[in-house]
Amino acid sequence: MKKITIAKGDGIGPEIMDATLKIIMAAGARIEVEEILIGEQVYLSGNTSGISSESWDIVRRNKVFLKAPITTPQGGGYKSLNVSTRKFLGLYANVRPCISLHPFVSTKHPKMDLVIIRENEEDLYAGIEHQQTDEVVQCLKLISRPGCEKIIRYAFEYAKQQNRKKVTCFSKDNIMKQTDGLFHQVFNEIAAEYPEIKNEHWIVDIGAAKVADTPEDFDVIVMQNLYGDIISDIAAQITGSVGLAGSSNIGEECAMFEAIHGTAPDIKGKNIANPSGLLQGAVMMLNHIGQTDVAEKVHNAWLKTIEEGTHTPDIYVEGVSKKKVGTKEFADAVIENLEQKPKVFKPVNYANSSALSLPKYQRKAPAKKELVGVDVFVDWKGLNPDELAAKLKNIENEQVYLKMITNRGIKVWPEGFKETFCTDHWRCRFQSQKDSLNNKEIVELLARAIAHDIEVIKTENLYHFDGKAGFSLGQGQ
Image (cartoon, rainbow, N blue to C red):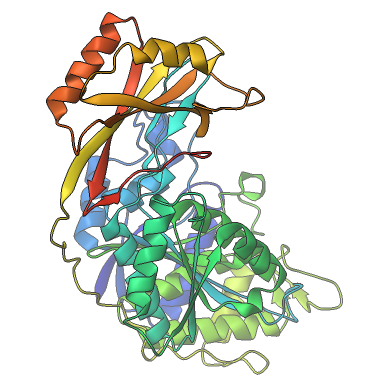
């Protein structure tokens, strides 16, 4: 008997959770349920995180969390509990199967059967943002080697376990050569360890178009957080409905399972919500805790119900569907089919689908790190980069020189174009006149900037790692 944590959430959450639990318990799930309260009620009680410390303790103790959709109130000051849960519990892998249910659920892609594995903890979702000038704000994109290695290895191990034939990497490393470049590099390194699995890489924009057009060409796709968030919703929608998809969030110690849709407050309490998304999340949960026999029984019964034409209003279509039912009635229909297998759909087999066991990340020997310059970001209201350069030339010395100025990543000095539009946010790159610098010399540079009334808003040190530049050159350089 495994104790799990559940949260019924907001909107249609309680209805679909009740239906899901009724189905899996009827199927023989060997679980004990411990419920916590999260979401809108907790937020509005004055807790800006949407969850109490006592509830956190329960989630961490039980390790397995089945969560219905929750509402984050509008307005500032409220933190996204979905993001917080993934980060605090180290749930680094988001897994979203996207398979069409043709011909019973309308889709333009009847052969679609792919899984999107999304990095869940870092990227732009670190949420580190600053307003730096009147005209410019920034959001830091943080990509780590451990984050890349964990999610990419998980994707290949998942493909191996599920007898998938190909893993595809999406990135934008033609532009973001450091961050996305690291993700692609690590993908190539790990792919070499799995010669039996085909691997490929797509630039994310054309890759996304390919998913929307010919998703049957993909098998397992692994990508960073933001790309995965967007493309997994696209993929779920083109299977027929976001409301049918569930997802798992996997960490080294804890795991969370959920539907990918929202709270749908407009249909709350009407007994018309489709519980399928949360039910699919529960199937993934049952596999994770080793109850693959129950997961298989539930999933096959659900497929049987779908192909019989017993549908909730969101997927009901005259001439295709046979019977329109509510949330409770749909759950009852699935329960009636628990000893059945689908005839049109291929029955699922989860005999080898328990939780994956991956090796711990091993930190590599550090590279030789040399400080070779500094990017000094300046708030300056002028428009002519030559004027700013003349001002900055006053703080050069025998240690550092001004190499270039960029504005929004485009080089505007030296030899900039007058047509380039400039904001009040300038990156001014100083590089060493010799082989390397030290931090004291950078501090002295900043002191000279203050003395010359130059408003420095941030700095970024420029390093070589084993002789290779660890910084972007800037477009136009």
